[in-house]
Amino acid sequence: MSRARSPSLPLVPKRALDAVVQQIHLNHLDCKTRLAARLASLKLNSDLQAGMEGLFSFLLNQFDLLVHGDSTVFKGFQTQVMKCQPPLTAGDIMVVLSNFEEVVMSVVWRDAQTLEAEAVFHWIHSTTRRLAEAALETGYVSIQPRTTNLEEMWQPPLARVLNSLVQNDRWQWMALVETKPSLEILTLVEYDAKRRKWHHVAQSEEWTQTVQKSLATSKPFTTQLSAKVTAVAEIEHDALSSFQFRQVAAWCKNALDFSHYHNQSTAEAQQASLYELLLDLDEALFAAKGVADVFSTMVNYVCKIANFERGALFMYSPLTKAVEGIYGHNIDLSEVMRIRESERSIPVLQHVMQLNQSMFYEDVSQALPDYYIRHFQLSSLLVCPIRTLDGKPVGVLLLDRAGRGFRPDERSILLVDRILSRASKALAGHIYESRTLSTPPALHGLTQREREILQAVSNGYETKEVASRLHISEYTVTEYVGSLMRKLQARNRTEAVAKGLREGIIH
Image (cartoon, rainbow, N blue to C red; front, side):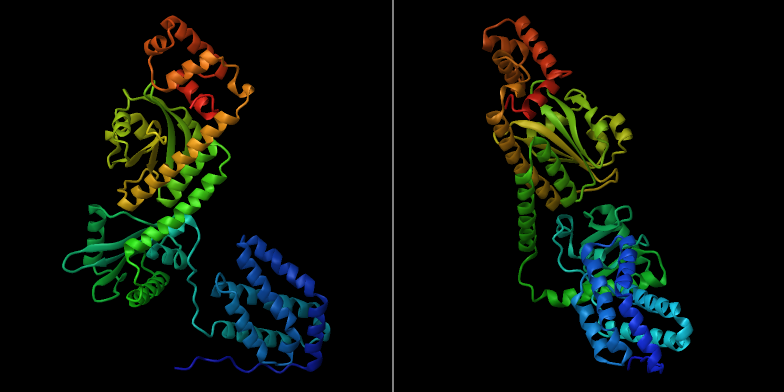
């Protein structure tokens, strides 16, 4: 079936077209400035704006040929469009052409007294339509290339496709499943309307029941991709969503058709992706300027790559067996820093530190007091210990998904553990550097004896043990502790140890 073509360009007196050409040449810079101002208001990324401005400049530069009916301009415009993909989309092309049409018409209108304005307007409109046909004549590929964004790289292929094609809150979730002999969810992604992003969802019994229900109701957003694989989605039913679902399903079907050419196993592919992510993390840790940078980099990477929305980092003191909040991601830092709790009030701390591995609590009421659950609207929680290279516990990281219930998969937990392990190495390097390069003013005036006692406190010794080791009385130890706390402006022993570690006074 042949494509409908636009009618021939209307005839316009030569003097009228020559006058338009002259006006365009005289106002060339003004035309480009007007477009740039409009694009700036759209807050586009630099590559997209540069591509759109380049197409507009091409049309202005070729205007002489356009008015004299040179058909090579349409082919040349089509070539320029192809060079700009991606990130240029069909919608972006229409923005360029509509602005081109408006700019030319405004130039004509300014000198309407001496021009056959109506005939020129028809010519401009027909020419713009021909340019649009040329640009969109070939199959249009709006999917983006493989991203280098860390968060995107760790998402499954379905999430990356949807992030390129569909970003609206009419969509809720989509899954690829096998239905025989029993339901098996191959991949499941959910749309986060707040962040306008699709992300991976760990499988659970609840999600299995949700998918089964959608399949059973024979909703329109279910389609067979292959003999084994079915696509199913929860979407608001309207014409646009139906079109988008068919488009996404077509992409998935084509990907499945090509997949047998891909020899790399899923495990190998995931390992390669993990390797790339960890290299980027290492670069960020290497660029960190101090302990605080290491902490923020560690928490931010964990949340972005492993798909956690909130993270709270706490310093742990082996002496007092207590934690103190020091950093938060997507959570009020002042709220985190107000938290100081011991193992007596949060028994899970002792359990996590002894096991030396991350612990997941699907029901957070088993892990934290009711006050924190209500205040931070917690549901499920991943608790991750942080240790030095010699295995000494120094902190704990709490992770969740903004209060929503979840169950992390093995991949997410593996990634968290890898990031924390690398961050511990970087942390040790900064602590060593601050110890060796520190000058007397950084010691806050602490005497050698006060530094010895602070180190002993950091190592977990009680007052009686410190007194025995240093051959002084318990009363003297208490006096020294009070003195060093005043010099460090610390409110308690835990805070004194934390400041001592951060500033390299102790290790």
